[in-house]
Length: 141
Image 1 (cartoon, rainbow, N blue to C red):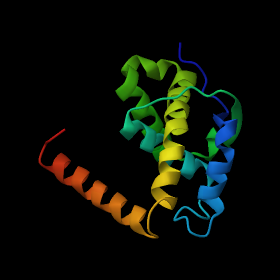
Image 2 (image 1 turned 45 degrees about the vertical axis):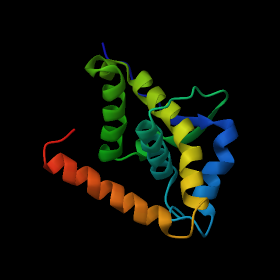
Image 3 (image 1 turned 180 degrees about the horizontal axis):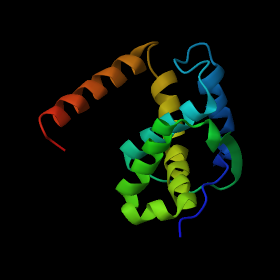
């Protein structure tokens, strides 16, 4: 029997300021986006790095009802890539995996955005996405 999804996603308490910087700093391309958007980008960034870190102290960051279907699909895809299809029966584990990747990803994301010349992150992200699209179009993994 499938478990119920959690009512919120958690971040590590120590990462709260990093998330707020990404959301509120005028030099951040994520300024003005929502908590779910930044969480999802952090989770994807951590997943691409291939590194999960368990949360030391949980802080409720965003209610899962605020994630649209596409965002929830990305969270599920990350979990399936990590654990296989059976993980979808344990919705709490699905979100826990995303939370662990986000713990890694938020620091990488903050460094990528603020550790470079203004605008560089968006240009590099665009280039990376183009490369991924082209390799998928050619049938490459």
